[in-house]
Amino acid sequence: MKLVLATRNLGKVKELTAMLNTDQQREDIHILSLQDFPDAPEVIEDRDTYQENAAKKATVIADYTGLRTLADDAGLEVDALNGAPGVHSKRWAGDDATDAVRIQKLLEAIEGASNRSARFVAAIAIAEPTTPNSSDSVNRVQVVVGKCEGNITYTPAGDSGFGYDPIFVPVGYEKTFAELGDAIKNKISHRSEALRLALKLL
Ligand code: ITT
Image 1 (cartoon, rainbow, N blue to C red):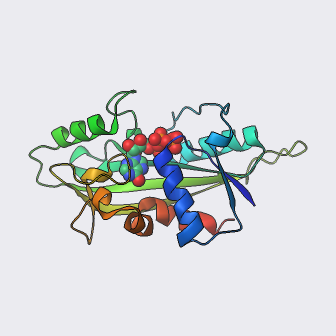
Image 2 (image 1 turned 90 degrees about the vertical axis):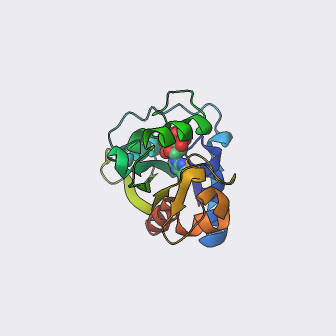
C-alpha cells in the first residue's frame, strides 16, 4: 500500500518513517513524501484546530497525488500561556523564525512562571483521493489525536529531534526530548500515540 506523508518538515518525515518501519513494523506500507512530489501545492494552515489543519493538508495532497495521504498537524500548549502557542506553534514567532528563535521567545514569555507544565498535541489525518465518479466526500478523511504531557525547561538542552524538543521534558523523564533521542521520543510522543491510532484506520 502506498502512503504519502504530506509534510515539508523533515523532522516529522524522519520520525513517521522510523515509526512505520521499526516500531509499528508496517513493511506493507510503501512510504512516499512531498520530496517525491516537488510541485505539490503549498497548503495554508489557516484553520482553528489541529484536526482541521491536518484534514486540509491530507485531502489537498491526496487529490494532488491520487494516493492515500497522511498529514500531521502539531503544536505545543503551555499552561502558563493559556495553551499558546498551540495551533499557531509554527508562526508564533514570525513566518521566517528558526527553531532557536521560537524557543527563545517561549522561554522569555514564561520567565518567572512557577507553573511550567505543557503538552505536545498531534493530529494525524488520513485521506483517500477523490475518485472521478464519486461525490462521497464525507468519509474520505479520518483524524485522530495524540498527546504527550511534560514541562518546559529553563534552558535548551540536546540536539536530536526538532522544533521545541530541546525545552520539553516528558512526564516520567528528567531529560528533554532532544536529549532522550529518537528511539525514546518515538515510543512516547504525541506523534507516536496519534500514529498508533491512525494505523488502526488503515
Ligand atoms: P508541515 O505542516 O509541513 O507538516 P510544520 O513544521 O508546519 O510542518 P506543524 O504546523 O504541525 O508543522 O507544527 C508547528 C510547529 O510545532 C513545528 O514547526 C515545531 O516548531 C512544533 N512541533 C510540532 N511537532 C513537534 C515535535 O514533535 N517536537 C517539537 N516541536 C514540534
